Amino acid sequence: MERRSKFRSLTNVVVRCRVPASPERATVQDLNRDGCKVVTQSWILESGATILLELGGTRPTVGRVMWAKGNHAGIKFERMVPSALVEAFEKRHEETIAINLSWA
Image (cartoon, rainbow, N blue to C red):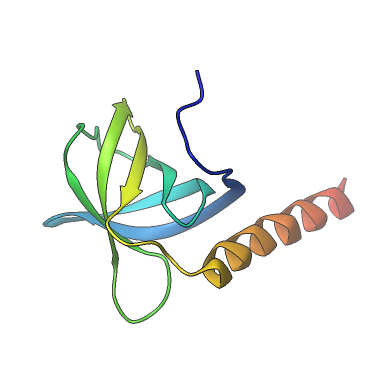
């Protein structure tokens, strides 16, 4: 059952993140102004954990793990991210798809 209040744009962008003290890479699989879904390379995330994501800008985006299944997690941001950031992630995803299709 879908519990999100807003549509999320599909992405597949690797970002740096921390859960609080341990640096890691995570792939943002979808994103909206309120939150995102991430897949980490090696962490097993836990519901309720604080996560810092370097999505762009001068400061990390702070979020809370709302659900976790292995290294996949749903994140709710403490503050909404700008629409322009969501659009930039979506554009990067579309460009990656176009490049991959041109190689096929």
